Length: 207
Image 1 (cartoon, rainbow, N blue to C red):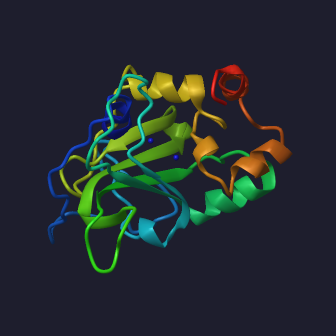
Image 2: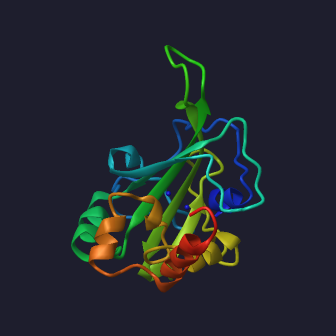
């Protein structure tokens, strides 16, 4: 296609509790700029679904030993418009980039569908990846309590090392964003780690 959700992706496990907001939960009023509470918690951008859509994944896992789920989850990724426009020009992310990832269930039964799967139900989980130089650079925030402001996930969690070791551009998984990958190639901003992964993948049997 982004920490507890991305860390759980490593194990192919997702939370399944309904994700809902309450009337007294705060929301970011300036969607394109990361906003925080006084104690440093990230406020969920209220209108992230009006941002630029990057891609969706179905049942994705980064763990080669993970078993396929009979009910795979969809993840949908969005980025704030200003950062998307900057990426078009430079092939990389500017400061204050905010990438939002939501997780939803999938179903193979409904309406006239005969095969395949579609997204269904409420949001099951939410995570935001923020680039903020004033706070040390990239950080993950997992919204486990609905839309309540989220604490920064500790930098020692595996999501950070995974993104650093495999992210195509600036520790982000641009390799899963088909509208951005060609731009990164054009601007020669693909990471050495990603290029190494790709070279190894091409050499492996079946590719």
